[in-house]
Length: 331
Image (cartoon, rainbow, N blue to C red; front, side, top):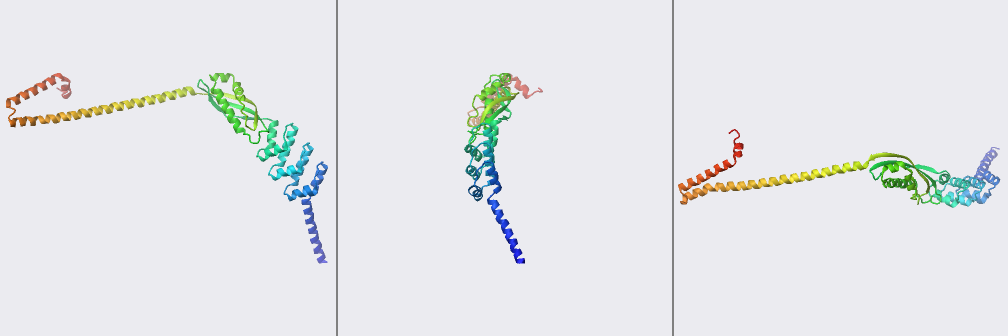
């Protein structure tokens, strides 16, 4: 009796395990839901096959039901392929439903490609229906009169589904619009022209087709704010004048240094000449002594020479009285 009871317990657990396996591989509830929703799926080929292919039947069947109810013709194989590729099946189906309700031409192949490219296809469809406003950072530019202007623009864009795969993003739009603002302000003769007609920037920038090659279509560009900045022209002129002054000072210092060097060189030359004169004068007594010894110079000749020297010194002192005063200021 006890053996029979133990056997019954084993059989019950085995039956529960088998029932669990059947319910896992054969989702009867999901099959019934699909059947009454008008979606034809087969138990063995579709539901059990999905389990064996490691595909979630709930994700595939429920999204297939949503697409069918919205009037979109999809198959389980299409959704399975996208699931196995690592895509977001629910996002793609919701995007297709939104695009269908908004009368947008979006096919499953395009939507799955956008999703696999890493972009949010549902958000892209929403941006196609409800355009997005992007605000540029503060853009500073200088008009021809040297006055700086600072502008902020609001760009209204919507998604271009055809260029979403491989198209440039918002950063490119902002960069191109900023470049257009700078070139438009820079080509204006006066900053007053821009302040009087700020829509001039919008018209010029919008006419350049800045959305080419991007994932968006620019609908409008509106200038939100324009402020007057610094007088860049005056600042540049002041900086240039200061630079010119520094250059002139450097050249003057160079000329002064050259003059000082030339004066020092001349003083050195004069000193060398004086040294030669002193050296020559030191030879005179020797020459006189040698003349005395050789008998070529007499006593009277020597006195006549001394008289001539004294007369020369007297004439020099008469010709330069200032030197005497400088040498003897108390005299």
